[in-house]
Length: 170
Figure (cartoon, rainbow, N blue to C red):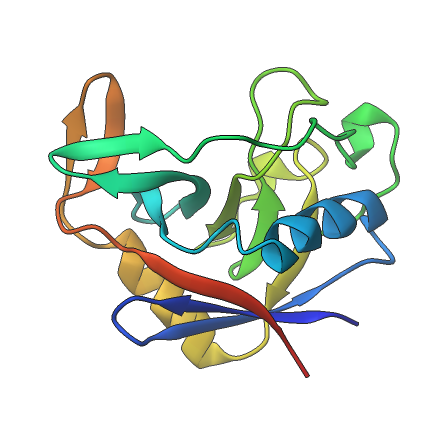
């Protein structure tokens, strides 16, 4: 089982284990971005208390955010409503792929649930979870920062929550 560490610019970490047996293409895609260093300098650009934190697609660009840039091709959404028997539930600490309304549109963006989100089960590709209580607490604390709206984007942290790196760990 693959494990990764999200290291924030402020030094805190979120450690996750990835479920390649439940969502193999999703994990492979995510690890391609990890191995290429794509996530370094991105931020959690959308945070909603009692729901989730989303990252992996934008960088901090005062006074707002800007898209990171080139993504790989979108992947097939590995979830039940898209014909894939991925039974991972969106519980607190679960990492899942963000997408548009198009089921096969996921690229680099991901989100981490900070509470149980059963309405997402079978509709989004859940592919891992936090490995310890401290990692879940860090994710939850990110969801509680003060936010604002900017140029059509909502729920942007007032003080950017920047990802220093995402790396594989033993």
